[in-house]
Length: 590
Image: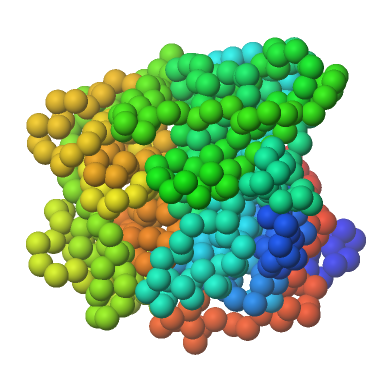
């Protein structure tokens, strides 16, 4: 074949060709080179994780049902995994990028993720999932657009703007995890970044000179979609734009009932879409603010992210005090009531023509109930650990899903307690045994003194209730059984509970964790193992050919020749490879 001048492109098996030819949905391709760079977001040079020399990294832009191919080259000095937060990888936890399901990508290796964003729309982000690496960067946006035939429940905005907010430390991730390993707290962060940059100098005393800040330029009279993600370490942030209303429209793949907010609390790991109309006069620029919540130290005043909203016809710089956040020092229900006000838009179409709210979750019988309680970190075997229901998760050297594939025994236990342990805490690899096509109720009870947010991979769950105090059977009488928001990350207030319902229709091994990086690192997570007793590729895709092997299987892992062009696929070759496959499909089957 004259087209196959490159040996790499000639290595196409018939089975691979047939499998790609049968795929009707388009592919999108990305090439990520993950490296360290030196940056000074808070005015002090420090080590930052960048993707393609960018911090934050590039945005993945896909459309419902697209196949996403991301080739990741690890140029860090330690193992790497990229996690696609909120992306429901239907039938394929093999691509989830977490240590319980995937072997890490060693330094100087590359590995290609491939998954389908099946029946999804919305705003998400990706990040490095190992060893607190997200605290040093490596994150970026992940947008899934509607197909053209599916209407969105609002007029098409003039533009899309991504905003990453998060608390930030001048110490890098290796120094932060060293502190945790030594039994210390991380302490107060050094600042809050907006799009990887420090605060605008709104106050000469609180903000030193010479810090680069983010400026977002907009056209007067136009409406923009702002996709805001809290990618921080552990701090809930209140997001607001001076003199502008935030019309909430979507959250992590679900269209919401459209409501105006002057500000909104965004907790660690959460993503929201706001429609913001530039309807103010252009006498000055306007402040964009992300300030810490649920903290009571006056020193936190300096830990505030400030960016600038600049109209193209603006006549002057922003000046004066920042717009105030919520004044709820003596009203601890304000933020919770705001969270309860976020409702699912049951009349809007989602990724498919049928209304997204046609899933009548409130009428489904619950088959499994788990009460998960967290507490402040405690000593287990002499080490400071974080727990869920008295269990601190220990990541196995052989990932759970890989152990299942190779029928390895003793890697994990299917004995995670349905209720919190009454005895001493323990550290082990304990996993929830989920029932395929079951309907699980999970109560997240926060007995810690700080805010937590929890995430479940592979699913969108329904947030049906939250309140202060201890959850009881009577609490179900307060559940929202009609339009509770479906999302992947929910907050649990200190001394309070949040109840979620999840339909276990996605086969695989899926992570359930706190999004607070310090508690996550210390073991506050588990996995939900969902197995179809009838083995079929219709409910779970087979193990990918390029799956990495580690732990008990490491002897089977072939070394990667990083000098060979055939194993280091750059973006151009990746596109050429799949373009050739599509060409051959046309030739052979048409």
